[in-house]
Length: 235
Image (cartoon, rainbow, N blue to C red; front, top):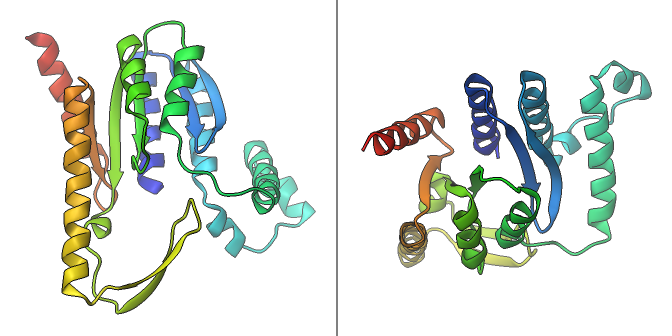
């Protein structure tokens, strides 16, 4: 989450520097927030504020004492509004089933609301299925850049014995034995296959793929991508 937030902020500041329009679409199962593309530093800073505010995990906020009315009065306006949105979202979440990521729905939304060609940075872990037709459709109208955010701990779990794990989207629970050599190898192989398949799908679709490791600085692969794009234009 922190890596995705940092990358989004970097892209917004890049748009300011180039005097480009910048917008924001936040989604999970459905669209959660949309800021239409516009120019200007003030607008870009609004995008950055929204990304930073929503990047605060509910888990982190839940660990903090509930702010008093006087505390809330001293907060900046956008943070007061964010706290209220999070309070409402928690209440809604208690009464609704979990929702899986819907990349396809987000791409269809972009196709409907963006009348002009745009560069779309899709930042995700891509733990989803069935989104490729919508992604290809969006890329025919726009310039889609897929950004895969991973963590090296997803590629190989350390030996910590028996672990109870829970799917963050479905709530499904499993008990796994991380000390098992067979389990560790199967997990590493599955992670490698998933990334190779994603790379092949993006390549066959003519969509650039940028890989971000959340344990390392996000700016390095972003700069490499921009340099690659610049070399491609000169050809």
